[in-house]
Amino acid sequence: MDTRHRVAVLALDRVMAFDLGVPTQVFFAARTPADEALYNVRVCTPDGEPVRSAAGFAVQPDHGLELLEWADTVVVPGIDRRSSALLDAPAAVTASLRAATSHARVMSICTGAFVLAAAGLLDDRPATTHWAYEELFRAHFPQVKLDPDVLFVDDGEVLTSAGVAAGIDLCLHVVRRDHGSQIANRAARRCVVPPWRDGGQSQFIERAVPSAGSASTAATRVWAVEQLHKGLDLDQLARHAGMSVRTFTRRFREETGLSPGRWLAVQRVEHARRLLETTDLPIDRVAAQAGFGTAASLRQHLQATIGVAPANYRRTFRAGR
Image (tube, rainbow, N blue to C red; front, side, top):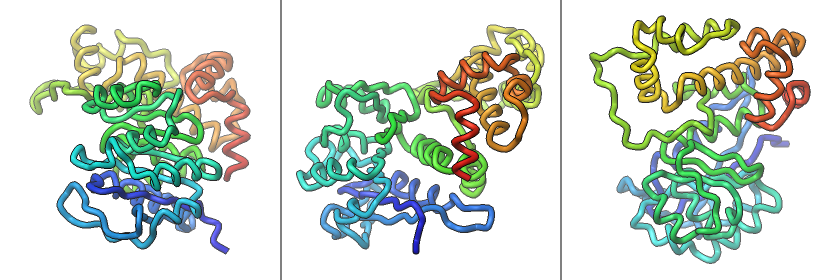
């Protein structure tokens, strides 16, 4: 019996080719240490017939909308602005998506959020999409709590992500939620992408790209990750980078989309999660090694980030493995 988690990827007319490839690649890369696949990913279209991609080639599916009844997770990739489905999704598609929510998790990448919104799945929910489509989205779906500044939004069984690479972040987040950080990090390595970016991180909206010859904060970030157990502050980070605090803060935000303080908090939470999943260290030791100082501080940050206490997080992921 096939016990793999079943993922249906719904390709609509003028589907974005990159978005279509993301869930198939990331979920395929999620495997056990024995190299056994954890997800069964299939692609469908509204009628089982080929659809055009925005990249100029056709997508030949093996399934129609009946695949959504089979799925445990449904993913709607982004579609090009020229697609009629962007603002007028076929009735059969919206009906099938509504029906799928009774048994499946539903996700969108980029402008796929328009399709979920048209089906009413985002009403009164927090959601995101590509920043360039913010005005168009708000005009047609004012009932959605749109946040165009984040990479992805996890609202339980309905998840949305911003453009292109944010779809990778969302899929890896789902793998991590399903199977823990070790499996997700291994999948990221297979795909040669960063293992984790916080969903609340800003989208990179028309920021100037630092010139190749200019100073970077990358070396300091590598150093800081190795020093998380210490009480690092902004002055120490700037001093390590050989910059003034003002210059360092500006460069850091240009390169990461986050303030140094927010970035440090993200790294500490991720390190604490990894320790909770992979070690038997007491909670106060986990807090100390991650740089939170006290178990109470760790509890506060973990609760704010993913909504669970450290002990519950450890219990959940240990049980999952």
